[in-house]
Image (cartoon, rainbow, N blue to C red; front, side, top):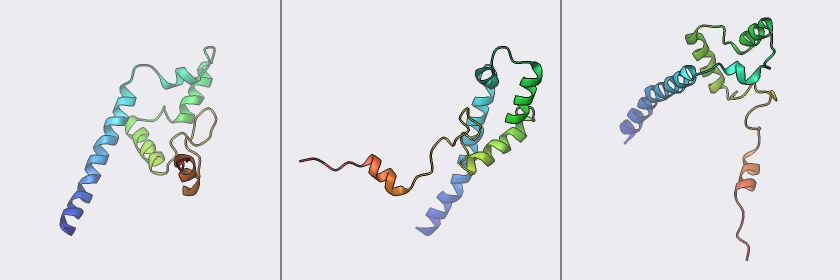
Amino acid sequence: MLSYFLRRLILVLPVAFGVSVVCFALVQIAPGDPLTAIMPVDATAEQQAAMRAAYGLDKPVPVQYLIWIGNLLQERWAARSRQAAPSRPKSSARSAIRCCWRPRRR
């Protein structure tokens, strides 16, 4: 039973890597530029270059992937959003249970 568990645990790593590569590739091949959604229409070329550098879009794709994986592992899913706040707030397990579980009323 332990050997089965260890085999399955070892197989998780290549599967997780494959899923992450596919997800990143889908984001990369999507049509359009991600900055067009954020930047104003009248942004200058200097502003666009500064924004590309801030988001790391001026780096090669493998470097972008490594940065993306690093942010994913550190749970910084939306570190550079418009609000500059994390995508999910840090909360205790008790508050999550309190929000999701409601006792039945009689």
